[in-house]
Image 1 (cartoon, rainbow, N blue to C red):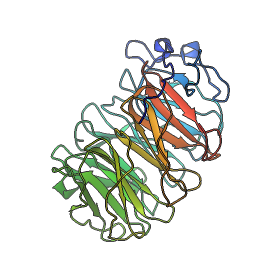
Image 2: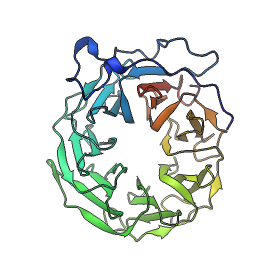
Image 3: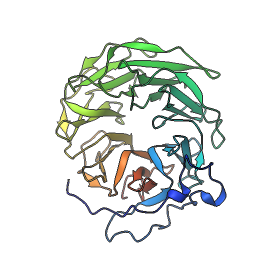
Length: 377
């Protein structure tokens, strides 16, 4: 990748930050409401991609599109509480920051139940899994609930929704074995279930086209491990190796035709991928390289069903590569500029445009977006 000119990400945001040193801010202490379709940034460098600040002092952002059509973003604040900002209308401007409390030891993961409520899962300071549920679309939040277990340090949980609309959450425990539990309804959860076999790195979970869950992780020889349910909601197969050598965490997406596709950062720093040769099938392609210089990865589908991959480059800018057509070949890499730390978060607006969120060099939340679905940032 050529090294691009980086935009200036230096807005001072400490005054509006989530802080352990002060009470939750009120009134004009919050970051101002920002309209993303007005250029509010200070003197961007000539010809540099334009990023916009949403303020705060943040870590480990997560973003999703809610059932009411608004993007919602969650970050871990300087006080280790979970902080939240959201669009005030679909495709529109942004709210103030507010705290959802908690004492987190890592970033949150967002799920959605079948009733349109958002559900948040995170590792607490005690190492256990904690859970927070929205009362309803565009409504308030319940209290944090401890689901127990002990997550491997540095891992985030993985969450998916079952065919019955109940949530299922997976963690890698301190002994490196995978544990999971599922929602029973009325706020109750099943006991923890432990799967045999260990994983050397964080897990990724996806749903096959036939409804079975599939899981991916890095093995101790740095190859990709894979297992899946024998039947929907049934027992799990043992870990099986899919080859390759990589570092970090795998990321998985589902093609429009239903085939799963897995992406990893190869040992030489390039983006490697392989895919099912048929939807729900047991056979996988050979590994192929998409080049680039990837760190950990974010994968999602755009409005037309094309897979898009985002990563931080060696220059600390956000880089993107996507399918030319659904299920098809790949574009060249494109730099979206910026300078950031942490894994980026990407969500799809109600009108289909993708929007990316990163923690900037000033620790504020920065974002930029497509100007039309599938095109142009």
